[in-house]
Image (tube, one colour):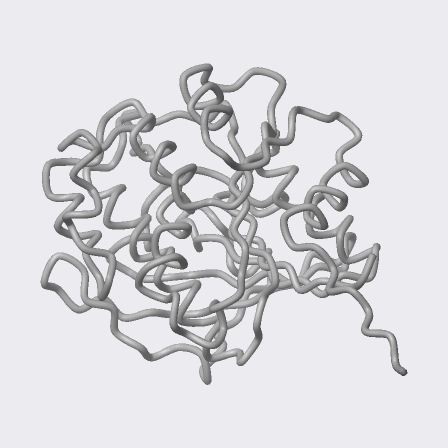
Length: 275
């Protein structure tokens, strides 16, 4: 298998957040692909629970400074970076004081979903894609893990489809057991609009986006789906299986299976024989 460039867009990565299947896969999958000589880049939100000093995060000035307009408001994009020494994996963090600073993850101190979770997911998705453009790095595959990355496939296939960084990129989305308790509010569709990602593309979805609608959106604009937990939402799994795209079932020993799946989604170009 030829070396591939794989962009991992993760909701959670251990050890920056507590261990669970999502955060462990956020660390172990990039590490496994890097050990197989694939070129990787890894992103996650800079959740307010992350201790920057302990994690040795520092700002990347050359990548920071852009403003993203969401819900008619400018939000500065701050990029930070750190390394997981044990895995030898570098992680880029998407940060913004309004969306991530001094806040917990998707739920507040009372255990309630933040009402702007939809805007946070939009900011995260656009922040990653804009940063990858600045890196002048062209991924063959983008692998999205966690609902925070669920709008990435839509943007890659619409708003960024003409960008040289993503013109030929294939998108894989993983299904996990993680859920949202509440929907993303009645203005999510409006906030999602950007370039060719028009609101009319969302007419087939419920007006109030919840975890299921968000999952369907990711599936509709992905080139392949992975069942990343033993048990995932049955409605979403059935929805994925009903699409004309490859679906990889759950594998506890995942590395070889995922690598083969990437090759199925993005096959190596055949060698041209010389006369």
